[in-house]
Length: 69
Image 1: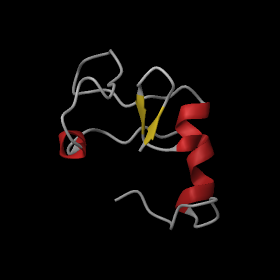
Image 2: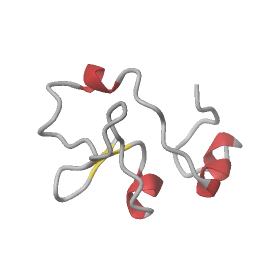
Image 3: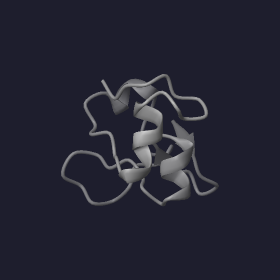
Image 4: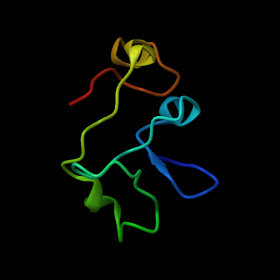
């Protein structure tokens, strides 16, 4: 989880740079640190993905181990 300067939450650093925040359920407003009490609140949220994710899922990302599970 990455946190931007304004408190928005992202699945990873790369999504943060691409402006792809975590959304809660059907809400179209991005989640922020002010919306949750702990990281368990993120359970069940959809992982935001894009074409840049293939590097990490292949195990070639800078810090990812290889799977979106």
